[in-house]
Amino acid sequence: MLLLLFLFSVSLRFQKVQSWVVDRVTGYLSSELNTTVHIGGVRFVLIKSVYLDDVFIADKQQDTLLYAKHLTATVAFQSLFIRNKKLILDEVQLDKARIALSKSKSTRDMNFDFIIDYFSSPSKDTTSSPFYFAVNRVILSNIHFTYRDFKWDDKTPCIDFEDIDVSDFNGTLYNIKPTDSSFSFYGSKISLKEKSGFKINSFLLMLLFITTACRLIKFCCAHLLFY
Image (cartoon, rainbow, N blue to C red; front, side):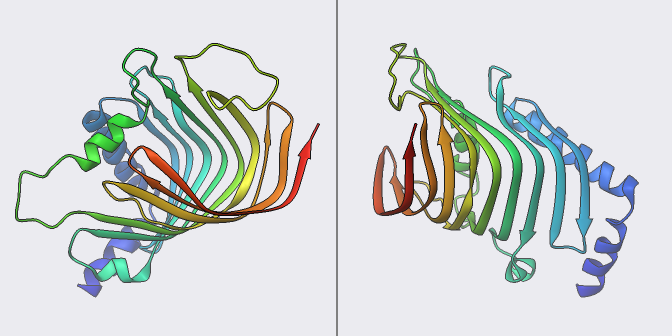
C-alpha cells in the first residue's frame, strides 16, 4: 500500500500527469454538477498537498460562483490511511478570490443549492456510511465577497443585508464541520470593508448555522470603523 502511494505521488510530479488528473476531475465535476468547473494550473506536493491556480466554478446561470487566483489544500495525515468515506483537510488557503452568492427572486433558491443537493443526495447503497468532511483551518487573503437577494431592490446608505459587498476580506477560520443540518466554525483576526463604509480591522467570532437559522455564539471586535 505504501509503495503504491509512493509511486502515485512520484507520478504526480510530472506535468502531463497533473494535467491529465485536472482534465478528468474538472470534466467529471462539470458533468455531474451540470455547470462549468475550470482549473488553470495545478501542482502536487507528495501525496497530501495540491496547489491550484485560476479556479472557476459557475452557478446554473453561468455566472461566477467562485473564482480563486490561488487555492492550496493540504490533506490531514490521518485521512491518507482511512478507508471509509472520510476526508479531513488540515489547511486550505484561498488567495485573491471572488465569491458571489445570490438568492433567486422567483424560486428563493441560493445559487449554490445545486452543489449542496448533489453532495447531500442519498446514496443508492443504503448500507454505506455517510460521507464525513471537515477542514481544520482556512486562511483567507484578499477575498471579495458579495451576496444579493433579488427579491428586494431598495437602497439604503447603511449596510444592506440583501445586497452585501465586502472587499479586503482577510482572516482565519477553524474547525469547519458541515453536516446535513448544520455548519459551524470559529474565526479569528478577521478584517473586512463593506461598500457602505463599514470597516472592521480585527474581530473574532464563533458561528453555528442550523438549517435556515444562524446562531452567533461569540463575537468579539477589536476595532470598528465607520466612514
